[in-house]
Length: 316
Image (tube, rainbow, N blue to C red; front, top):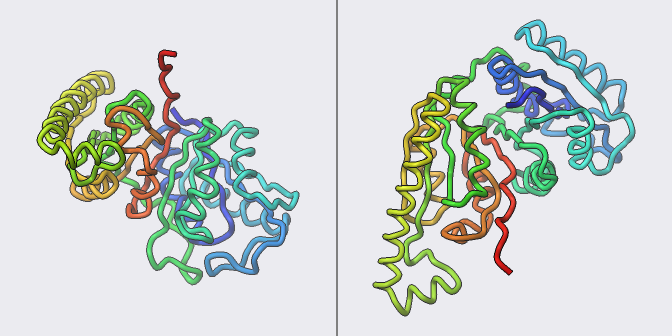
């Protein structure tokens, strides 16, 4: 499991919204926290409504203060590091530091310039996942939190009771299961496995053409896939319930995948979603089209993103 958590901070209260989650993980796993700040070249005057850290000395003082607060208030093991050479590629620098410092989980907030898609998918998480080395835990900054807010309460408990894992029936997405099961075990949470089968109207490409010309046959095929999906989830549920000693429930939904996954998360009152990216085969083909970022854009609670497994070898 995760033993070293890398927490990039930019000096803002919004970025510090990750601290309660990082502290909770550090206590439950247990794990050590490393705070990181990357000095930017040509930095903005402010970030998220707060004065931006532009110099190495002020970044050092800031991180040292946060680290001391975490030790004093939460009793967790914390170190900090400032990348002092002005960096134009901040996201890539975070990726490199996660590797150089031996970190196995990056914990970041979704609030950077450009919004969720600009900061998360255009920068840090996409690059970290693209390296295939470091999972990313994404924490959404609370709505309305700004520069005049007090310091984040790091002892605010994170009582995760339901962990949801979207699956597509393929081995590539199963990389999320060991991580999710272990998190559920450490928190005493329920694990909920969910998949989505498309309705005929949602099919695209050759499948959509087939559905228009052969609606009855296509519907029968989709219903067979629903039964296959239910059986697959039942096998996974039994395996992880036995292996991890946790409660596991399952659900098969119909419709557009991103919308249905968001609805499932809401109905289950999920505290954490664990997702793997990306899948491209079987009923997995329906999931291609970047489901994960579309779910992330609509989901306001923590999401743990892991690298999907390699594509299976195909016969030549």
